[in-house]
Length: 222
Image (cartoon, rainbow, N blue to C red; front, side, top):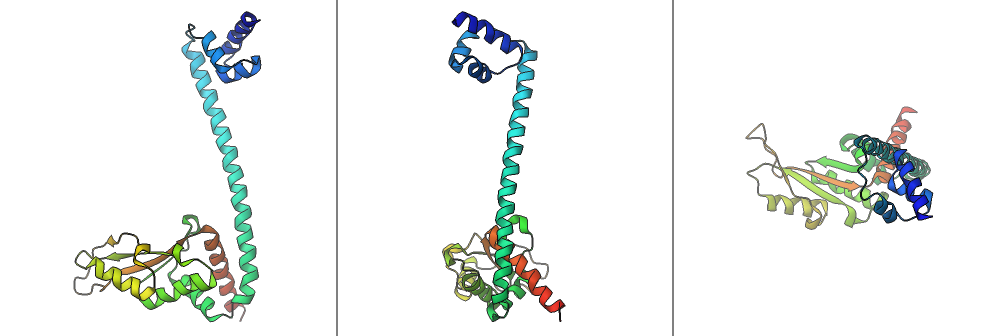
């Protein structure tokens, strides 16, 4: 019986079947197939064809997985759009909501794909208000809100960190490493650089972008 299976295994191998496929077809272990073929030097052509087929199968499997992921996230973002639409009716007359959306309209990152809800500015008051918008309107835990700032090489980074942390109410340990920049005007440098508040949340970003569109439509209707 084993001899017959070995002969059949060789035939299958010549038909460019992989070790795993042969093991499954003949109901034997993959190690048994490897043992049968231990002294056989398969042609380079067979190996090449098997490698091509394995790559094709892998590519097809990856494509299917990507398609499933796209469908999953499309459903999730569709839910975010519906949720944002329902919430807008109750939020549109809220002063903090209107202010936060206006700030994002003017200063926010609009690129949906990067998944970052981010606002940058030199005015700590603007960033403080946006921080409140994230916490009170968007219901984001303050522990998830991060910040970073751009500074000139001659500025004291620790002083800048203290300034931004104190004024926008974000703990120092929530700041990323500052980014150094070179100013064009030596006499008109910003005293504390430029600060950014951000939350990495694609679901929230979808909602904010929907809110922004609905907010704009409110004014177009008048």
